Length: 200
Image: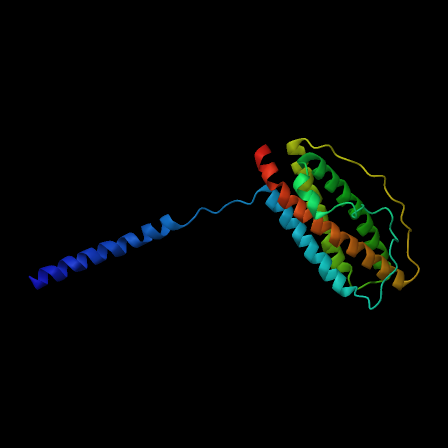
């Protein structure tokens, strides 16, 4: 009798072991593909991290001269309180136009930095590459929802900066300004996610 019980127990145990892979596979949740807004917010977060890294390399002990670039997007009128009221199409259009403006400024900064052989040039090139990728991704989403493309007048920037310190000051101001923009854009993409899901 004892031998029969042992045999039955062993058989049941073997059957349970055989079912374990089935239970394990069945419990695995399907991998959720990132949405278009996830991609936009992740790309913006990456840009913000690159900007912060560059700012650490341009740290100043004292305040630098500000308002050297009056052609940058206005950020003082954008607050976190307005995020819940954002509309999809106009926000995408405005962010795209803003990014194109920043792209113009940072490509200029890259050119003048190369002339002064600034050590941060490789990371600046990487940041511009990420910015172009975000612009392309955002433009694709604009086409999907038929958001209009805005155009800003191309600002006139000096062909070169005479002193290395001028490059440092320009870098610092552009990076500080762009960090604020990335922070706001990241929050905007997150707040627009439900509205984008409803359209797509």
